Image (cartoon, rainbow, N blue to C red):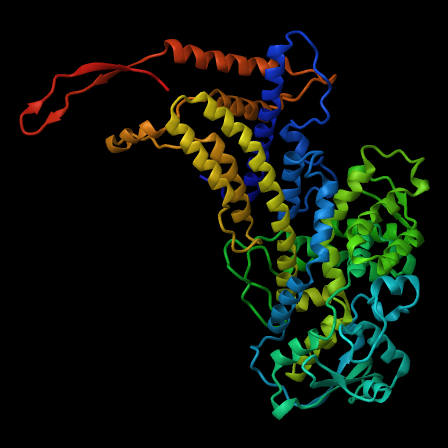
Amino acid sequence: MASLDLSVDYKKVQDKVSSTKAYTDLKSQYGEAKKKVGDSFEKQKANVTESLNSVKEQTKRFEKQIKSQFEELLDINNITGGKGSNSIKYVKKLLLQTIKNIEPKIAEILHEEALNAVGCDQQQMFTSQTLYIKVKSIDIANILTKDPNDSVGKALYEKDPIQIQTYPFSLNKELFRRIESGQPYSVDNGQLYIGRSGQDLFDIQYVEVDNLGQTGPWYKITLPNRVNNINKVGEFLIDYYKTTKIVDFHNIMAYIMNSLSGAVSIKANVGLVQAEDATKFELILQRILGLCFDNKTEIDVSGVAKVAELDGVDNSFFEFTEIDLRNIDLKVSNIKNGVVEYENCDNVKLPVDADTILDSINDLIFVPDTDLVNAADKLTNVLTDNPNWSGLAISGNIKAAVDLNFVKLITQGLIGALLGPKILLPIFTMLKALGQTVVDAINSYVDFARTFATFVINLVSKVGAIFVKELFELIKKDIKNLLQVVIADIAKEQADKRITMILKLIQLLLVVAQFISDWRKCKSVVDEILWLLKIATSGWGISSIPLPLLFASQLMDGYSASRAFIGTIEEMQKLGIPTGPMPDGSPNLDVLSKLAQLKAMVNEEAENGKVQIAVGALSITPAGLTVPTSAFGKKM
């Protein structure tokens, strides 16, 4: 029975994958040992038989943070892939390619959640009116305080220049230009802002004071009537979002690299309050990615200032412990000092060359589409190749450690790039048009997360689920390859052709995975992996006490030395007994001796083993009973 505790299930997956991978490696060593008795083995290229303890991170100051499903899968991938096709470098490039192709899916998610955030259906109507949107409420990242032409601005704004009525339109740049101009859009451009449908959407002007005399600054939005005065909220949102590119690739890289190194914040010389707010928001995003959606098909609570009815989400979800605050202060201090530290690199404070990193991010603007992934992959090298790192005492593979952190921050980076002024503007405009003034109270990322809890949770979890699916498919492929070896060995141990046929059918079953409807359901994902692992190591039949079920025991495949050996490895790893090669690369003869012992037991059982059973009196209808006797047979 599957565990109700997901952390136990993830541990169980790591356990079974590790023992199965160890089996495939030790099996090959066993064959070589039979040919070359007494000879030392050639050094292994990789230690693919890690114990369970090596999978766990050492207890450090972040030990109380809950891992997200994505991070749990990264741990499993570390076992299944090792230094092969699934290495962290390979995973990184795979997910960069996903980011490059992800915009249509992101746009679909955004359209749905924007409408939910407004709290109405697509048919709800708004009236023609003039309203005011506070600039700070839609610019929680302070993008509009940056010049699009300087190094920080280039990283945060769209790559294309402003071209009126050309789509996708660089609307963040246009919002900055409104601040510089002070004139309405219609005055500077001779027309209102037009949607992809060809209908007027709005006019927009930057003003310091609203119609009530309140200081802002504000964006004054004038909403005209649409065709036939049919002003539907859903149509407005879709018509608007189709005019602009949801997010540029280089923007996502800027936010990931900023989370990874603080380079953008360091170069922009952000204030303590802004740096603290952004760091708190990153922690909230991490908590959201740690949520599971197994009990509900969807977070179905819509509207403003409401929290989804989801286990683990209440007001405390957006509060910070003393440990959280100390860690936040530490990161803010590092940003102000121009350094970064990683827990898997002994927390050495490493200087950040923010200028070079920003230049490399901005160079992506001019990279051809076909080379974009490779160019983005090299961004972490710009960070780690800093000559000032060479004299520092850093243990381990620093490049691999930084790549791993980059991968872990992909979803956070994408969300950061997504929540820009042009994305929030239409949502807040429609809320104001429907009489919601709560948006005026938003002045920070944390304010936004609290007020729009449902929107943020849905958006982040759905985006994160895209990367969970990609990583899961990679792991599943590698597990299938591992199981091919196990299945083949078990088949060789069985003389019965029927068993071989069943095993073949099992192999075919591996091709078709169980359908996972929502990749945010942690239980579905981990159960799928456990199901795959169980196929090769469990009996195909059933056995129980009731007589009808006993007849079905003929379908069981019998004792398997291979399966028993995998179980032995699993139990040894639980005890912390090393199962991999020796330090000099030679085989672990103690473990191999266990396989030899198990095989000898199988051979002895096959040659000389027998079973004797007592056959009780059998009913004969209507004559009576048979005489009890004994019977003999072979144990399979």
